[in-house]
Length: 261
Ligand code: T3D
Image (cartoon, rainbow, N blue to C red; front, top):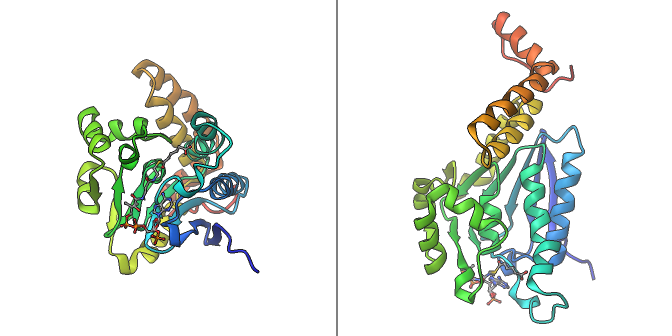
């Protein structure tokens, strides 16, 4: 019998799309899927041709969090499991050199909600929903939700969403700042690809350094952020992309950041 891959991988015009592929379980994550996604992200990071990574789900769900079917027979505790699976995945996303787009095509629940929040850019379909569902099964939010959500909506709203496990619709998600754009379901895949290609045409080195600067600034003082900006600006300014940007400006043409300097 042919085994269906838990993760689909496709590259078009510099955009690597990773599709969680357990649609009958709303792409609930088992260890195979978590491992495959982490490995695929790291592989994308090592390929120059890949300029942007998109993570999305097949079928009507984005990711329903931990696959509850496999938890009872597991031979490791929660801490050990999180440290071995979800935590390396979220760290990989946040430190990847490439921009990561979370294309939330449907329900994102539990660790799936954390995954949806972890991207550099979050694009939602109109039917997308986010649920901090953990308290429904008397667990604590994990996989980064306690870090991401209060930074986006404040402590009190985060606590309310976590305590009541209420559903956040796409309209509410956009109002709360949980996503950058909402697109119609019918055109979602094409809209995500168009957005990703726009991002892929931007200067990759500058975006990598911007991601580093923003990540560091989230947990640093203004003093440290200023020092960090000054150091990273040297790396950006010394790169061929900067020369190309300035030359293009002077020549009154669009810069070509895809060419190799
Ligand atoms: O290390 C550790 O283990 C700790 C880590 C924890 C991380 C976590 O993510 S804890 C949270 C785990 N996730 C959940 O508790 C979510 C459970 N699912 C739901 O609450 C609902 O399914 C949704 C709100 C996500 C969607 O509801 P709905 O009505 O749109 O769909 P449904 O009918 O409930 O689900 C469709 C199918 O997917 C269904 O299977 P069936 O009946 O058609 O055969 C359902 O059982 C299955 N499914 C949904 N979520 C999961 C799942 N199967 C396994 N695990 C799931 N998480």
